[in-house]
Length: 174
Figure (cartoon, rainbow, N blue to C red):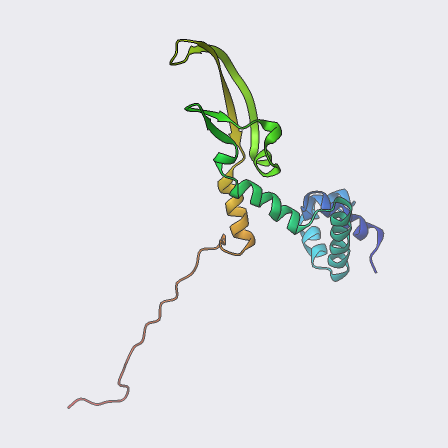
């Protein structure tokens, strides 16, 4: 059975996942908050309450691992031809309203840069517009997907060396 401060700690822990700050906000002593927060996280009742609160939060926001994975997939696997097009020998951005959700999700920033006039092969003046686009970090999305799949770890792999010694114990030399 948890007391009021322990329940408050569980709620506060979900704010920033920092046990020290959660302990302070829950009313525990600042001086011992680090040790208190660490100790509280090992309490089975508090662990159960944090898990329950996280599940409740996920249900309210409809946030699931599948949704996060789908969003990362959009960032990681959308190719530039889905955003850019070659028209009349010039590279242009696809019409934004015609973009599917995946390329739209990849765009971090898109803005018109400048408008100027140019001359085509026939000598006609045609407007030329440049657009600057910035995409979300594809490598970061791939890294997160890789971590989710267990492909990368932050811990370096240790190599274990085995050395075998053959010794003849107790032999006498003459």
